[in-house]
Image (cartoon, rainbow, N blue to C red; front, side, top):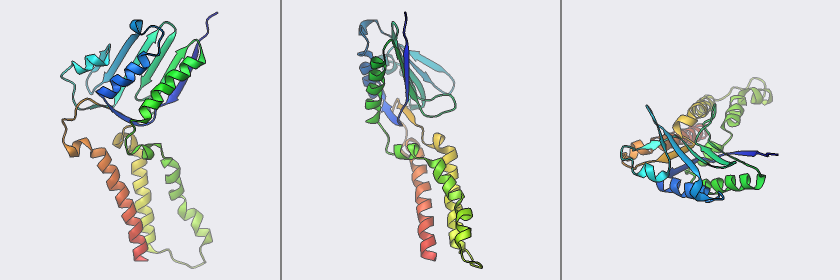
Length: 224
């Protein structure tokens, strides 16, 4: 009889460098019965090509790699035990890690090893990626329908309130649609040779959008 167990978990938002990727690679590598016989693969998807390496050390020796990579995967296998970590999935920008083996304990241990490491590498905006932005947007969109029945007959809604509601709803809608593009959930930093503005463009966009929403709310209260 042959038994195979597979477990999968979503990855938290994370941002790592090559050194951190190598540390994660080594931790997962050590989980196998005979680390010297583990088959490994690291795949990076660039704009116009895909690169596959046997180890993270090979990435360090490839001088043409610069900037950041948002699509990459890590695969390790020995016998009936396999670990597959990918930065994104089909129809989802959030990455995942899966493990296959003949027992649940090994799968759970492999997944928890990766999650514990990546949790320590979360970017400051991880709370925003994990937030239920769709539900928040829906709540704001239904504010007029919910509040109108409770208003006294003949009352007029202040224009500043309408402007604030439109501005906040529009901001939330843009952030919801472009969240994956503005703030990628998984980033591998190959080099830090980019300028400050280009390197932090996504984070600055989020800060500007949030600041605009806050100022709109403050302006509504001040204008009352």
